[in-house]
Image (cartoon, rainbow, N blue to C red; front, side):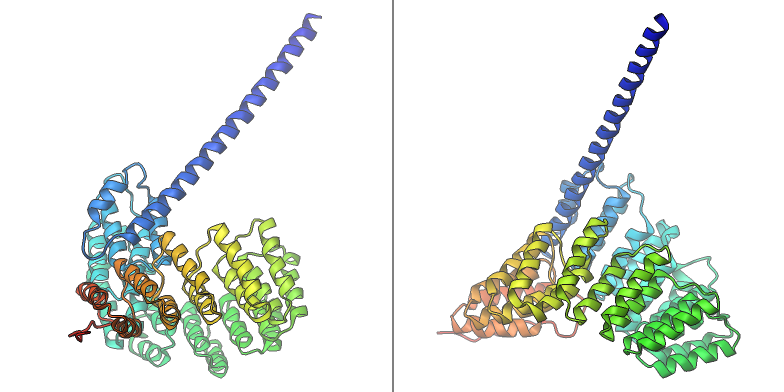
Amino acid sequence: MPVLIRSTKFNQLVQIRQKLAVRIIEFKSTCRSLSTSETEADIERITRIINDHPFPDHPLHPTLSNQISAAVLSTTFVENVLGRLFATHSNGLKAFEFFIFSLNHAEFCPSSDAFEKTLHILTRMRYFGKAWELMEEIQRTHPSLLTLKSMSIMLSRIAKFQSFEDTIEAFERMESSIFVGKKFGTDEFNVLLRAFCTQRQMKEARSIVNKLHSRFLPNTKTMNILLLGFKESGDITAVELFYHEMVKRGFKPNNVTYNIRIDAYCKKGCLRDGLRLFEEMERVDCLPSLETITTLIHGAGIARNAIKAKELFDEISFRNLQPDTEAYNAYMSALIRSRDIKSAAGLMGVMEEKGISHNNVTYHTLFTGLMRSQGMEGVCELYHEMIKRGFVPMTRTVAMLMKFFCINSRLDLALDFWKYLIKRGCCPHSHALDLLVTGLCSRGRVQEAFECSKQMLERGRNVSEAVFRMLERYLLQVGEVDKLKELDQMIKRLQTVLPPTRGHAVGIPALPVVR
């Protein structure tokens, strides 16, 4: 009997401990959830404060000091804020000031990711002087943050916006002054080569190979970068000629090589050739990846072959691979091209059930299909669902929706969308403003067009010359010379800190007198 009592008490004790362990796990999980929620709120709050800060009238540093506590300033927090600033088209100098503010705190441990995001934001806005200043500062204080990716970001933007000679000079400057103590080899050469190939500058890429091949020994990755450049140029013949030249020179094709060739054929609607290469991969023991199959699903969509797209999508699970967002997006696009909008829309629910996130391509793809098939009703339903979820689309989707709302005389939705983006801490791209101002002015809503343009300028982004001239015409018609002068002054102040960019308003030398 005492043994039974001891056994019962032991079992009760075990049960109590198990319940306690479960409660502790639940408590920790709740704490993590609350912590994540609080961090997310802080990220959004700081992003909004930075974007809304009047620029360049007031320095950002005092505001950051008042709004950001040392406890919040973690590596992940800074990376996420910079990621949001990049996605929301924040002024590059604001992002730069935020990153420098973070560096000045001893508690903060900077990462390559944070540095690269800041560099990306600066170079996208052509702040090359500040970008070099940042690289030099990092070289002096945190040289371990300098990576091939940061080099690639800088060289790609210089190749896009500046001359061939400027890009070569930048590469040499990095070797002598930035990546000090590092001997440049094939990896660095590949970064330079890729800068030209991604911009479809194949003449320049060939020139680089001829100029530097004796110093840097090419490898398979070098060949794949050149192959990618020919593919981006849209010339399948050039792709195949270079592929055979690559093999002839003794380079063994790999998974990346085949993916590039398959993508080249699929983009031209040559699905059969893409499938032929798919089969060839397996014969030569070069296993297809999830990216390979996703590319073929896209190709099936371009060829409007929904049945083959379904077979390929099912092939993913058959090969013990897990379909990701890109795979679902490719299949969704294939269904839409085949006019099966209902099934395409249903994929969003399937993704959600499987815990696969929707991204901007998901929304953009479905919006495109709904615009063609269901018109305003279908678009509005998805639009309101997107807003309800708090999703902030990227530039291409913002411009597409803004144009759709304006040409369909739904300026109420266009204006609400603009306000939503501003409220979420975004600085919408100038193309979205062009569309909105055109729609508002054409219907006599000049005051609202003026306010939206002013919001853009206050956030440190210039308005296009077309917008300025349109507002000039309409504001003068209604005698609002003061408002026009206010815009002109804001533009001129902004131009003192913005890099010269084609298409930006140049202000007005003299305003006519309106009587």
